[in-house]
Amino acid sequence: MQLRYIFTELRQGLRRNVSMHIAVVLTLFVSLTLVGLGTLLAQQADRATEQWGNQLQITVYLCRDGDENPACQSEVTDPQLDQVVTTVADNPEVSGYQLESKAEAFEKVKELYGEETFSGPNPLLTEEDMAQSVRITLQDPNEFAGVTSAVTGLDGVSQVQDLRDSVGPILDSIDVLTIAAWGTAALLVAAALLLVANTIRLAAFARRKEIGIMRLVGASTLYIALPFLMEALVTAVIGVGLAAGALASFLKFGITDGVAQDLTFIPWVGWSEWGVAVVVVAVLGPALTLLPTLLLTRKYIKV
Amino acid sequence: MIRFEKVTKTYPGPGAPALDGVTVDIEKGEFVFLVGASGSGKSTALRLVLRETRPTSGRVYVAGKEINRLAGWKVPRLRRQIGTVFQDFRLLQNKNVSENVAFALQVIGKSRSEIRQVVPETLELVGLSGKGDRLPDELSGGEQQRVAIARAFVNRPMILIADEPTGNLDPTSSVEVMKLLERINQTGTTVVMATHDSGVVDHMRKRVVELGGGRLLRDQVEGGYGAAG
Image (cartoon, rainbow over all chains, first blue to last red):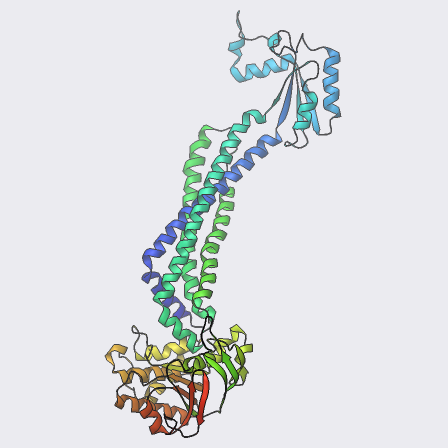
């Protein structure tokens, strides 16, 4: 097989159809960037869930004097506390639990908001205002419903709080962004496929005489299709390269040097996740151009 | 070399079959004229030989292979044994004479050294030595057809199919083209030529296969264009 011929044809093909190829490259670039972005965001959601999921605790706040929950008549009694602890300990979904006293809770609050807020003659809160709590770690962070329903409503229980309640909105936002990125990407991928198909149709039309002669003199289908496939591959490689660059810029300037500086409590995606996104894009890009090329060249240049 | 056994070819849609139970046997090294009115089935017969289409029923053998049973991937190999020439030359206008002829070898993967050797030899055979650098539109019709013949013959095929090769040529050029086809035939290549050119057929006195309405009307050794010829 004459490689020189293939490369000459490739060069001519790219030049002949330059505007269509630019359109394909740009559409591929945008759609692949969005696919990559979706992949990054999905990984971001996974990382966040994993991080918070591992640490996820259900906190059972026990009744205290003057509790806002009308079910709480008074400070939790020892038998009530025993009942709660037994219920938690017997639950198979619980991997561990820990009792937190009023004093420990007060220490944590002081740590969070500063000692001075709670000292002096008229403090905002005292140790007595704090509630005792049972902090439960789950076997599987997703299986929280059983434990929550088992302890909710027990005597002496004021409130059951799932960390998910506070983290949920952030995770939901990431999910929405992921779906939006993938949804838009899907539309653009469809546009890219149509553009690729059109490009091949035009290229096949421009070369119909040549193709006709090639078929008659006995060139193989692969040989006839190869310049088309090479053209498709070149546009895909450029599209993938641009998308990988855009994703790297997004990661560097948008995340690492951007939001990650401000929102340090969230575990942000890094270069390894970028690598995964680039692999996805690098597989998808050539597939998006080569598959329609293979199908259409079979149609247009059928031997 | 080429054998049609009760070949019928029906295209989709209404109308009579393009070929209807045709049986013809063409031996290696023969020169055969395929004559008949437009729509008589000549082009279909040539397309069957090239395996551009398949018979609806019956069998077509080309170079010992039944083309109906030939796997798709083997078709290019079959076509390398068949050279084809058309009325409209079908030369690539952006390539010069040598490049047009070399193209047929390049695309089947022949080496550059082989191409460099064979192309000038073939151009000499068709009487176009020294015109290798010319573009097709710098040549006369007869010369362009000779380039097309060179391209068809450069791979030394066993069969040469010519579909109205003199249809666009003046009488002098037609004679030159026919001389060339005869010379190619003398090298052992089977030549099958579909034509309406009665003068050529009558002059050459070769085997004539006449089709009409898809049927074989006449198969005559040393025949003329008309039945009486």
